[in-house]
Length: 149
Image (cartoon, rainbow, N blue to C red; front, side, top):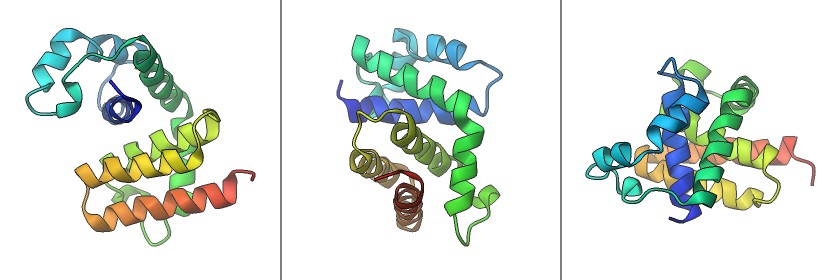
């Protein structure tokens, strides 16, 4: 499994965090299992194989970090979503941006451009072109204004 697949799985799980009463740890334990992957594999290509140890650690770091910093990440999304009320932003788009913003803020080993590019590529699979452009614009503005050069 490569990192972009792990990133997409982390997006799915961070999206799901908002709908379950589970903690990030409980969700990860349940969802990063063979039976869960087998059940989703026919519908989602990214569940074709279980993550290895490094991919699992990466997914867990993202999902747990988003669980802790979700409010902060949502504030940034709201700040840069000019012309869109936060409530109007598609939930999947929010999950995609949270993953990218978390990487940008808390995973300096990942280049900002890679985080943005991967967010855009994931968005293309799930969102309409106007939402993809919106995500790209928000993440670009976020990096220009919030991340020291």
